[in-house]
Image (cartoon, rainbow, N blue to C red; front, side, top):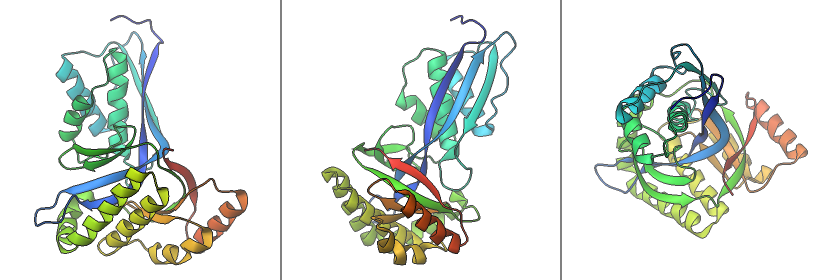
Amino acid sequence: MRHPPGRTVSGVCHGTLGELYQGPLRAGQEPDIAVVSFPVDRHSWVYFTHGTDPPSPLPLGEKAATAARLFLEHYGLTLPPGRWSAHSDLRVGVGMASSTADIVATLRCLFRLFALPYDTDVVLGVLAAIERADSVFVDEFALYLSGRHRVIRRLGTEIGFHTAYITEPGTVDTAAVTGLLLEHYRRHGEEYERCLTDLLKGFASGDPAAVARAATASAALSQRVLPKAAFDSMLAHRGRFGADGVFVAHTGCLIGYLFPGRLDADVKSDLSAFFRSLGHQCSFAQGGYG
C-alpha cells in the first residue's frame, strides 16, 4: 500500500484515574485481581507520518516498541518509510494507565496505517505478552481480570462523573505488591464480594450514586493495605463538598472525589483551597462516560 510522503495517521487511547474497583473477582483462596478501571478524558496519541527515509524509532519506550514489533510479526507486515511521533496527557507511574494507553494507541495507529479492522483479540494478545493491563482498549466500563487479560463483563457507557483529584508523592510497583494484595484479598474476600456486587448493581441500574458508594468502599478496603495519606481527611469532608464518593488508584498515587455534575467556579475554588491545605495541587477532569 503506497501513500504520499507527509500523510499522517494516528492512534489515540484514553487513560484512567485509577479504578472504581480493584479486588478479587470472588471470595476464595486463589483470588484473581479484578479491576473496573475509571476512564478519564486524558489521552495518549501516537502518529506515523509517511516519508522517504527508513522508519524512525518509536519514541515511547520499550513496551510500545515491543507492541509494534508483535503487531507486525502477527500480520507479517513491514513498516513503510516514515517517522513516528507521540504525545501524552498521562502522567507516568501514578495510576493513569499510561503504559497500557501508549501500547493501545500504538496498535490503533498501526491498524489504521495498514487499513486493518481493529481486532480486540490481537490487542489482548499483545498486551498479554507485555504487561498486566487496564481495560483502556475498550471504550466502555468493564470488569476485567488484569493478569489474565479477560473481559468478564462489559458495563456500558451510561455512567459518568466530574472529578477533583490529587496525586500524592511516590510510585507503587504493582508487580512488587501483588503478593501483598492477594493475601489482603484472601483475608477480606467477603467484604470485597459485597463491594463488587453493589458496584455491578449500580452499573446495571444506571445509578451513579450507587457506583460512587461502591467505589468509596473499594477505596476504604484498599486503604488497609496501600494507604493514601489524604484518604481520611477527604472522606471526612466529602459531604461538605457534595461529592458522591471517593476514588483511588489502588496501586498508584491518585485520590479524588466523584461528583454527579459539573463543578462551578466557587466549588472549584473551595476544593482547590482544601487540597492546598493538605499540601497538594488539585486537578479537575471528566471521568467515565454519560
